[in-house]
Length: 174
Image (cartoon, rainbow, N blue to C red; front, side, top):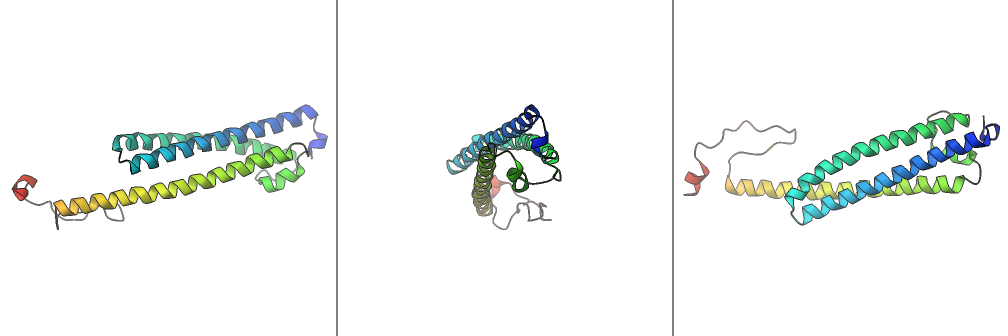
């Protein structure tokens, strides 16, 4: 099957749905990048209250992206089937079979989505490094207050088997 065998309105509907899904995915990636940039600013400016709210925003936006991506993948599978391709065909296989007047737009949207996704991955890695550094600084502070005392979580997320000191902070300082 190819689009040439489909009714023109059916072809237009399939492609319009795919284009709209790609645009929505692009929009939601842009939203995520904005949330991650906000997160980075909160870490750099040490705005802990904003950072806690931002974590919820990141999680929420991740859920939105998953839903939007699922919708786009559904439209992509439908187009692939109509082209006689395996439903898991990628855009590399789909785009050359599309009507010529749709190829540039769909190709541009796919490229923009991929570029924005790469920027999101980059920003996520940056934020992870910043947050890891903040945790290290907090660990150093704790160690300076409780030298040789309680440790924080280990690499496996467990607390070491060390008892808390038998004195209070007040007694230790005073």
